[in-house]
Image (cartoon, rainbow, N blue to C red):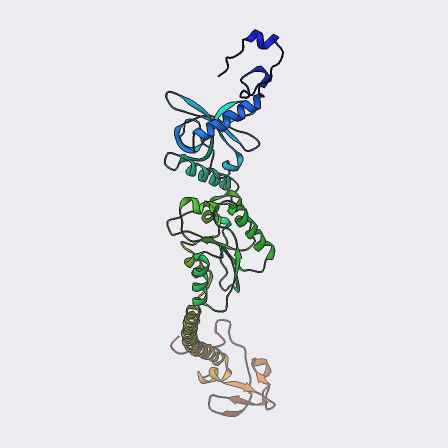
Length: 413
């Protein structure tokens, strides 16, 4: 191996061509970027992707979507970066002080020569990141009133067309079609294909919801998928999907996973179904149940009609009885009044007076003679009695003394 040249010789002597390695001599010096890029290749070659445990500190989210922070323990720390493409797959940014598991690779950023850990996946101890992401989305939707029970719409009783947003290859679609056809063959099922998990699933679901909304020819929308892990169902916790579902102009049913799975879409939809099969049962009325319901309603109407008829007959009979009693009382009151008036008329009748022993004097022409001065001596007159008439001739007359009543009191008075 040739001896290295002295600094003075290399500095002041003429350049000497050499086949030595780049950077081993001033004549073969390399650029800084070449150095940092070589370090990057060396570091990445020495360290395969691995999981690292540590505590998050100094977290910063850049406006371009990249996340920067340090991962440390009691003895050391390493700078970390999560590029925007990887950040989209992480449910929520970590908090300072959070214990996390980071999956990535040691590398060097050639621009600055910084040693850093490029994180591809991040998991908090337990389900901290997932829970944080769910809570952030829930609070945002709640703030805008999208979780308010008052805005929930009722499902139509007899839908004619149902739109279903799900994967065309999943079991959910087959379950919904099978249950819907068994309940009623008249309801039309329209499948709107969408990606339900993985990268791009939220965008696909939002596009499908907006497509159904623009179509406006379906009566109900079912959105969902079959069971799966937390990551498989995460697209239905995306805030964009939830807001699109809340803005859908037709009633919606969310049917994501199994009964124990509850997603943000379940909270926003008008109705939550435990499973896709349950969603079909809620949306499609059973033909047999409808016929049974119609028969029951018919029976209830018949019973109600009979009861109404019986009540009408009873009411009519009561009215007849009341009318009969009222007419009887009216006749009795009229009879009593007539008898009272007849008694009063009889008391005022001249014949009644004659029956008490009095007589009435009348001229042959029928004029009544009620004063003694009307009797001219020798003038004939008729004396009307209770049971007959007596012809008489007037004699000399005289007025009654003032102390004598014109009519003596009746006997017994």
